[in-house]
Image 1 (cartoon, rainbow over the protein chains, first blue to last red):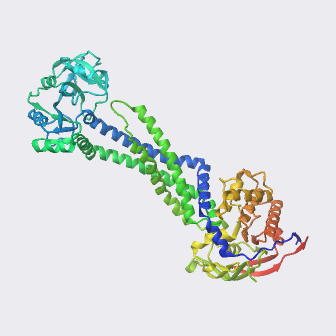
Image 2 (image 1 turned 90 degrees about the horizontal axis):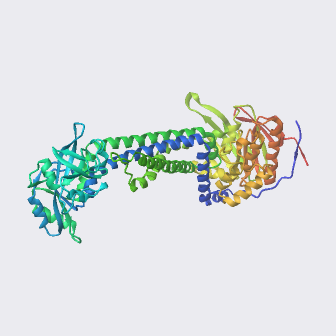
Image 3 (image 1 turned 180 degrees about the vertical axis):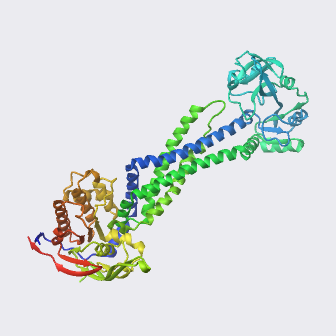
Amino acid sequence: MMAVPRGPRTTRPVVDVAARIAHVRRYPLTRWLATIRLALRMALHARAKFVGTLFGVVFAALLANFQLGTLFGLLAKNTLFVDNAAADIWIVPPGTTFAQPGQRMSTALVNQARVTPGVERASALVMAGTSIAKPGGGSEAITLVGVDLDTMLGGPFQMVAGDPSALRIADTVIMEDAQRERFGGLNLGSIREVGGYQVRVGGFTWGLLPFGPAFAFADIDLARTIAKVEPDQLNFVLVDVAPGADIHAVKRALESRITTATVLERSEFRALITRTLLSQQLGITFGVSTAFGLAIGFVIVLLSMYSSVIDNLRELGTLKAIGYTNLDLMRMLIVQAMLYAIVGSIIGLGMVAGAAEGIRSANLSLVIPRALVLATPPAMIALCVLASFLAFYRAARLEPGMVFR
Amino acid sequence: MNLAVDVEGVTKTFGSGALVFTALREVSFQVAPGEIVMLVGPSGSGKTTLLSIIGCVLRATAGRVRLFGEDISERAERDMPAIRRALIGFVFQGHNLISSLSVLDNVRLVLETRGVRRSLATREAKTLLERVGLGDKLDSLPAQLSGGQRQRVAIARAVAGDPPLLLADEPTAALDAQAGLAVTELLAEMSRERGATVVVVTHDPRIFDFGDRIVRIADGQIVTDREALHETT
């Protein structure tokens, strides 16, 4: 056995265990900050795992936003007319759920509305289903909207060619730009038969394509003639409330006068349409696909984070051996979950924005409201933090003594 | 005398019923402050189990363990991480450095875990790494170092924050003979400089005599406990 040389030995003062324990507990913030830095470094170091986890978040953010954006786009298509008809209050046939052709009512309602205090203007709107003949034969369905040209309530908007005043020219209609090819190559000045009546195209709107046939606008008398609607009949009464008048009070006054129809504020009509669409097929279809996207993303993040913990068991065991608590490990995983969620949300939202621009058309537009953009990162954080719990469960069960095996 | 480590009648069993395995049988063992003890014995003799119990990463089934007079057998499980941070530095068989952290960060992390402010931790970590001869490798990742260099980082990490007790588990197992001796010499030197108490579990007979005492363990019991050969310089 060899003899080993020894240097001088320092004598340490008596160890005050309580003081040392108190010292290491005194600055938790220092440890937390170190834990955050460590969590970020560990997440970014394993690049393949980082990209894999990020993929899950991007997938969830992208699919959820895409589905909800499509849903909002479809809802907007169906409420667009109500939003832009310049009417504060709609008087509609009982049981109405959409701004589409339906029951007819008496024009007497217009006069009843006009004499109601607080009403600035009121006018009839005719809406009837008819068809447009194509030059090569055949026809396509359209929804003809007859507008009172004195008020222009319910008149054409989002014009891309021509002007709403073109409706003042006899036998003129304004058609939907997105349907020009479908209707046989329409142009300004094109002559077509609508409901067997020859009309001239005086302008084009863009994107007025609710579920059902595209809208075409005409003077109310022309619309009545084409759609064979009696002169004393209408589909809706559109009311413009006088400046300064209380819209709720005007609505109540109209309700007390008119008992044969339903009186709806614009926001109520919009909400009714939305509710109806959601309660029918749209809510279920898009709800399921959104939940599916979130669930797939959740599973990807859950498995990636769990596998990351499995890959790093020895390092996590080492951290526990040198004094990390389960709470420290939980903080690490939550920080990593937040990193994945924030970066994934930004990428996902960026891709959705690109997709929205790429697929934007009169037929389909993604509508991503600001609330949805703002809600995405918190939702992804919640998803990732929730998904990190399986990883935490595994890390928490880790015995620090495993580092000696 | 106030002992650094006082193990009294410690028994440790694993499993239950017919599958019960007794790793330690009423082991009693003391280490004086500043002493370097080599815990040696064949595989499965219980030396790593004993080291784990002293290191507060494993609870004894029976018996008492006191560190610097504090009875840790009585402490709740939730207190153990703080006790480890306050009192113990570890050197593991496989160095166990955090692969995503640089050499400097590996040492600094332990200091910050022990409540040392970042600026001070950076300074102290650099000093320690210079002391172990790795002042030019501060930004290297563990994967970029040789086995001996990694173990030197592990020693710097273990002594960071000046813990009074250092526990080393087979610190030379993954090293060649020359690197193993150099690492053990460094561990012994640094612990003497700091007056730290050291318990080293090892199979490697070449490093036995770096300790003050050699405690041999077999079948879960201490069989010999003798002073090491040494010369004073």
